Image 1 (cartoon, rainbow, N blue to C red):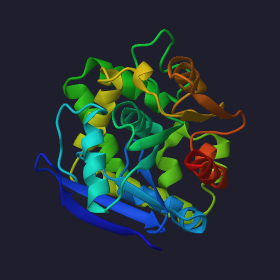
Image 2: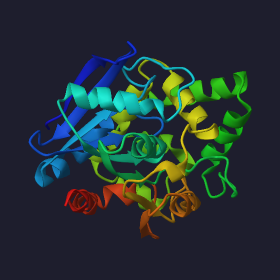
Image 3: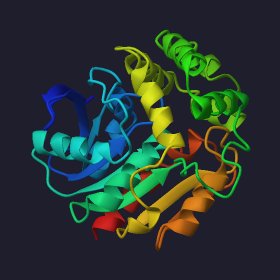
Length: 294
């Protein structure tokens, strides 16, 4: 596996964990992991990126893995970190994809970093919370509880996030499906039938909490507060990938984004869930990257 990681220093002096997979001679894709998550999740794309001639860059967002915390961050703050990571690897323009909680961060790059950012994909990504639909309707019970607490904040909420983070630090290939409880429908459990896929997910969960629970807490807070940019600011080609069986980010989120991002297109697979919408369609995703470059 061609996985390379490093700790770099951002322009504002923080430690940032960055990593890459794929073909260094290929075009660049930036991948923003989900919530909670960390850089090792990018390993899921190693084989398909290499085979398709792409170089995939990622990072552990502030507070995750070996990256220093940035308290009070918004999705907009990831744009500077993305540029620092690209500069470290000697890369120029890029395509961006964000999975789940990485979706708003990919969209921030699309809104604020064009023309260096050429196109964007939100893969089962969340919508802003100040919307005209029930933001948690259709989520599994764990997410409904978590975001109700996130809205109110305070000690109970922080203790809840800390408990989840500590649990996730014990993730293994054998127990990672169980740890997600009621958030994984059968189609997503099937998508994680492969031992190697479960181990990559487990490693990303373990590393997410390496330095504590603040990356997770800060991510949650970005979702329930203003993102710092308007969806209408996005001018680069943008695609929303989603399935109707998703219990983490229901399809209503993608439909809202489709209605509010100018010219956005949909890759809608009704039978798929939060994990399977990406894991089962990796070749289609990288084919979409090639078309964007063409």
